Length: 317
Image (tube, rainbow, N blue to C red; front, side):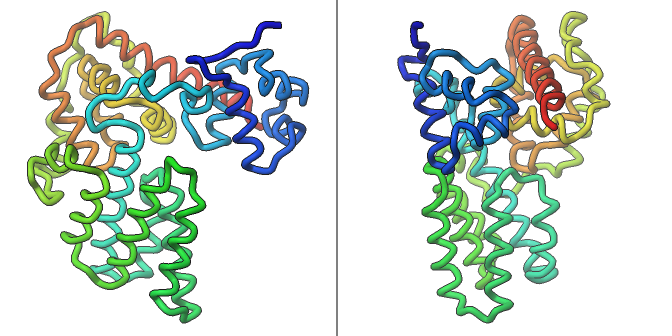
């Protein structure tokens, strides 16, 4: 049987490496996915290809993108400006750190720890780091030692997450030392890069308009055309489903799709973005001057993502 490769790199090798890194057998991975061990064996030997539902499940389980799972080269993945996957994650984590700093200064460290669990942030390490440091503090472990231990955990993160881990560890150290929110914001910007600072127009994380003002400007928005109504009804979907879609969507597609949608749909999506991403995407929408064809293509991508989410939910126990 002919072996199948993506982008010149065998996907089976990636699946094998990720499984081995977790110390799992083929039988254990098969049990997680509710497939036979023979199916996993064929995937790893490149004798068959997981269908999209299983690619989705594998990516979720191994905490990576489907592109990384199948070994697509970076140049093969659509990247636009500052909005690559890593910059999105860093910006979201930076926004959460800004809020942590504000809460800790206003209400104390215990209030910050409670707030972290409720934040709409995809960083598992942030939640771990806050609880870990607080636990060490209650045990009266020296602060310097506590953060050295936290930095050791950063080195164990997957390579794609280490920059995020270093930023979180450095910012939390400043938060626990009582450093001002403005300096912590400057620290996190330095991890994201010059493009990010240029994007916010030299502001030190100050938004020109508050969150509600941004959302209000889109409430009365009309659909672009009769054909561009593919997302109508999404305003009735749950926040969790929309958040899952957003995590798997690049900003170019999101901007084009929302440019054609009604105000209710736009607000439903934008309401699930962090303050910083809300500011950026709203500005991109204001400047957007694409075509109906681009709108329809983008909206169809969102429908496909939503469909895959629904299919995976039926597959999971």
